[in-house]
Length: 139
Image (cartoon, rainbow, N blue to C red; front, side):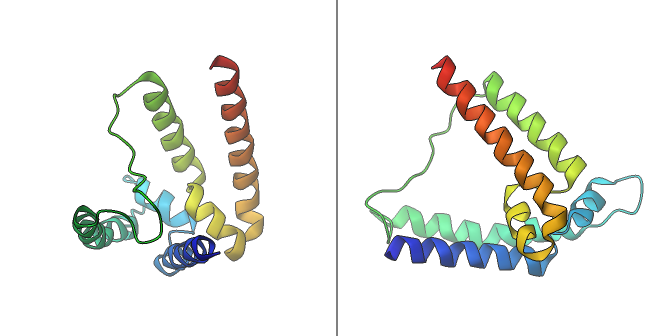
């Protein structure tokens, strides 16, 4: 129950940050990517504003032997740049540019503007399911 409440609190804080910053609005993201039109710098300010808290979090993490709510840290190892990573990154970027959404803002969008986010979330779940079944069959 404790881990559930921590996850719920973190997700709520993240979703609120997305809503307050306007990052759950796909037009903001597409506006940032529109360098030749009406460019919207909001995303750049949000990313720049995230650097300091994240840097502090990494400094704190280095000093902890274990996390506060788990038995060990789940920090992914730095891996090689392989084909699945590159292709996935390209597909993510294309989808982000077209839809103006990525998974976090899409989930937050279900609460803020469900009709706009629902199609994206359904497509995201279908894509994750296809990916999972493909990886199971090749493993």
